[in-house]
Image (cartoon, rainbow, N blue to C red):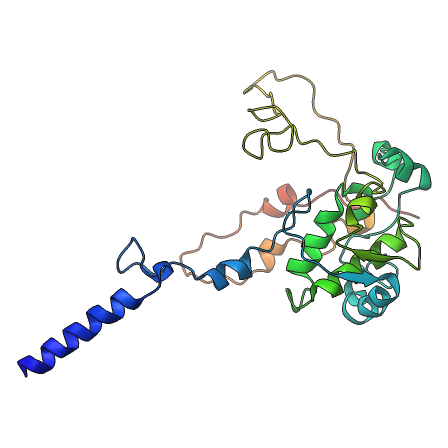
Length: 266
């Protein structure tokens, strides 16, 4: 019996010594360190300076085929989207591509803000498509698939021609044609140090606390269009009560929550 115990103990010790460095956590009995392969599976972000961008390429034509098969259900054939999602394409012009600023963003009467109007970096498009799309099966697209889909989306916005092939070799040149490329600031201290050249070490907000007599009421410059207001009703009232002791919904809850009704068109 003692010999068996000693043999088992020696075996456990030998196994522990043989474990790779990543498996020997400095927090005993609290999980384990992630393996290099596991870290690599999550370390997929692509930054504005294109660090993390994998090699690959994809054409507009291939992107159209993928788009119609994997993306059009939610985003429409031409990026116009359905009744749920905001349009991806529209609102940008050839002048915006030249200037780097989208003029329609300054118009209070413009009916919406599409993705290509707002996004400043092509890396944002690539990264989001890669990590989050398609909705029903995220991370299922290969790098070449993502290049192709990004190329098709850019072609819909007249940023690249129909015979274009996007790749890790030319993506930096395409960045120079993004309509709102100069519409983003990095002077907000969201990243440490001066890595992005901001030179600022504190946030870009300079608000002061105010509890009363805080000046005139703010002017609302953007709101949901009339047809979209209260389209689903008060979602809180539609939730099923779980606990018996749950407090009843106050009688004025709906009135205080809901947006004003849409103006009549007739």
